[in-house]
Amino acid sequence: MSPRQPLSLIKLGGSLITDKAEPETPRTETIARLAAEIAAGRASDRLPLIVGHGSGSFGHSVAAEFGISQGGTTEPSSAGVSATQSAAHRLHRLVVASLADHGVLPYSLPPSSWCVVDEGEVTILTMEPLCRALDLGLVPVVCGDVLLDRQYGSSIASTESVLVALARRLEESGDFAPARALWFGNTAGVLDSVGATIPRLDPDQVDLDSLRRPEVPDVTGGIHLRLAATQALARLGVTSLIADGRQPGLVQRALAGEACPGTLVPADPRS
Image 1 (cartoon, rainbow, N blue to C red):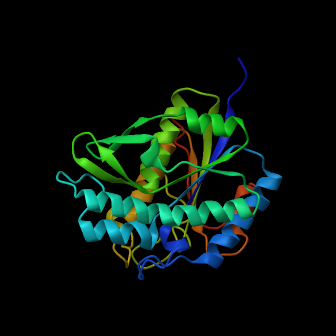
Image 2: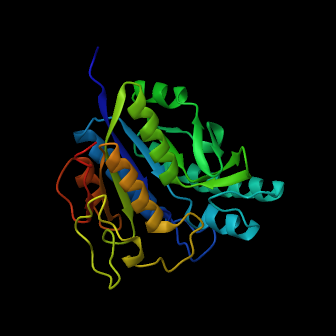
């Protein structure tokens, strides 16, 4: 039996690639720079890669307008579901196009086309398209999305929840084994209550109440959700780095395996 290939996960935060204070305002120059850095990092590190990105001022603002949130909407508005999906996918197309322009070979996989949630949790994943894309050397690109929910009707699925669900399925079977996750936002890692970066957070020593709250509302939970995702990944043996995507060159350096500033959430040694 051939060894499983280690896999990298990248998440580009919605606050990094959009101005979350202004509806549907992409940071186009930042998106282009990040795409270029991913391409350059891939040139020195040929590990299979999955890229995820947040919805920022696209999906979040529309979801909030229609009252759709993570955890489910029991009486979803059809107009709200459609509008939220359309908004999230408008940003998704911008990100995918920029990755393609820089030679990353993206393969668009918005979760609403291959995932189903049950009581707010991503439980049904049709993995074959993603795995076949990886086999071909493509880079699957996922995003925050509005999904149909077996119990609630509809539910927002954060990029974090999708990546964790993917990691669990890949860990259970398949040719790819998630090895690391790189989370890039608009802060220098995880900040404590006074705004200082926490350099390391062991998975079982996190006090979410001590962390700084986001200034702009986030229907999926912001940094608290991201940190919960890193804890879940740590239990699967995946080390995470939460870092400042605004710093030029950091994405490329992290992909190349260099030591980078930020908050490290190491894999649980018991995994």
